[in-house]
Picture 1 (cartoon, each protein chain N blue to C red):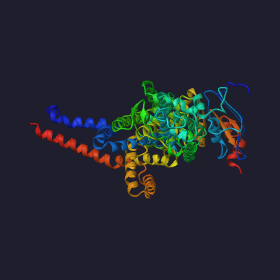
Picture 2 (picture 1 turned 135 degrees about the vertical axis):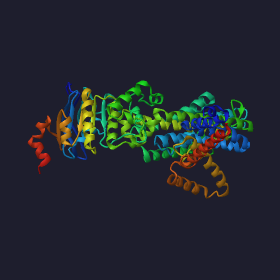
Picture 3 (picture 1 turned 45 degrees about the vertical axis):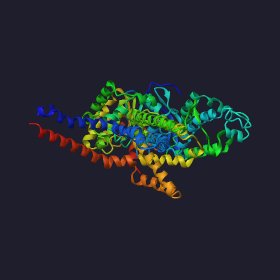
Picture 4 (picture 1 turned 180 degrees about the horizontal axis):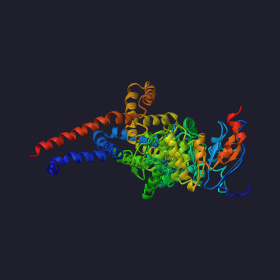
Length: 247
Length: 390
């Protein structure tokens, strides 16, 4: 397969679970600096797609190239180190550590066993934690135990933990699920801001939110891509309307 | 007010507070207390026979603190720590046995100069893998390296394939069974079910008299305290934080760019290394090593020590080991048939009722009361000093 200028090039990707094709010969290209939103009805394979890209699920066939490097046979932690960050649907943070420690532990240094043993929280780590905490709006809560945060704050903290690693591709699975209107607005601003020097893939259901943040929208249905393009174009696509409203 | 704080009696409460803070810092107080108990109280209170007994128990404590690291911190429950305890013990015993089997003292054998059990099993020469154990540096290196390397191989094979939890526990138990069967079956090479006995000297230094037992007790206690400090270092490092984080949010750690499997391998290897040191010290203090410390039953007992003491507490694990073993000595003398049942009941009881063991009971019941007592003490001495000042 030829090399491309895309940051991420997914080509002919398939995975099946017990004969059921969750992803079926899918192609997806993401540009540098692009914020792509993936939408689609339940069971369309959106989360599975993210699982495949970050290595959590092994592909049956096809290729995933990140900066023209094949990712399909790489271990998860290597994919992360290559520059792909993944946020899970439910907030996945270390509840009994403080906000500061959550961010500190995510700092990409001392990742080996003995590196972690020798790791010291030096000035540059503290600076970076402060910087990220300000970006996600939790600077005042650094000493707070993460388990005590509100649902929305936990989601932001997990995004912050990913930002600590400065990934070139950030994948978020339904980041605003369960958030209040105000929190959604803040999150939209946050995503637009952090997208300035990286690419993102976001799975989302809330159309208003999608319209606000998306550069381009991909509609998935039954493991395939149904439509792709700017929001208003996709919204008026008769096939998309059919999938969402028909039958 | 200034005069009051400057006067000597008023300094007491602040000094008391400083002491309290210092002792609370990273659990240092409990460590100092343990050091006092092991190095001062025990030797002063006990006769040599009982001190040696405590020394023997303390060798199990190495296994228990290893389990605190592997089970408590990394969530890796091994039911086969006897394997590593035994391997460490056997490596040391092989050296001591060779020293005890010089041609002069074994001249009545048909082949003098080889260990007695080999002669009984019609072996004519020392097997090749026994030969390097003539040298103490090799034996010590073997104590430290062989069990750790075995743990690495087991851990790497299991954790890289994401085998964990109950399956890992069962596999370690199977390995404990395999090794004990192997040792018992290969009588000519291992001494069989009797183990390696009649150990006498180490580089000419007789390990049997009381004076040697006292020295060995102190060596053992100091090594144990060093091991606890090292484990504490691991716990307070980023590595310790990650181990704890992995227990609850393994995927988050993995997708933060960490090789989760290698962290578990490390914890398992550390536990194996500590167990092996304990095993070697056991051989030195007790004077023999046998397969009865390798199999499933001793391995499970070692887990009980850690559970009773508190699987999150290094110091607690040491007390747990001492308590269970004193209990065993007492009860198995009075009710030999009931002991195993009692032990099982103890384990189930602790896990059901006090999952954090003795250390957990201390944290939730004793410490708050101790804290308020210290505060009241501080307050009363402060009020006394205020009254006393003009």
